[in-house]
Image (tube, rainbow, N blue to C red):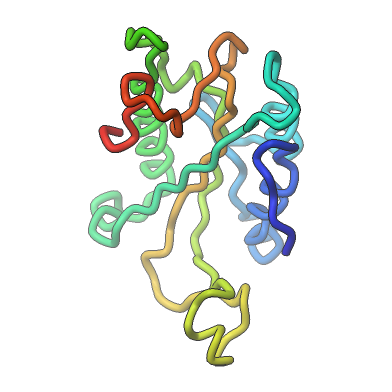
Length: 182
């Protein structure tokens, strides 16, 4: 129920992303990145929280990106989780190519250069702002009915794996990252 801040530890966000694990038991989804499909939550926390050289105390340490394929896209991928993970890795390659230096010159990053971790979720949950919750029909945190709710949460560290580049999709200068172009 606590709100996390992306200028501190990623622990609260990682804990939140484990919400489906208990009901799935041994069939739970592990975190994945560009190279692996079997990453434990503690490794995600260490990977993001330890890779901050040169960042100030109040600087953003990570970003959250959500990929939410539409029903038709999920059907094309046959709801196949392996294909969804590959799709995510391809998106992260595109994301990485979008980063430029202050001079506008491309940094030449690939998805494998980014410090990122993903969590595939099968369900969506009601938020306190949903009408159904406000009307008292359902509770905040209840699972939404239906299919087509598969989505991927991506945690992207502010620094690349080599701790060389600061990356931010929120820079004000389009020459450094063009969010709409991504």
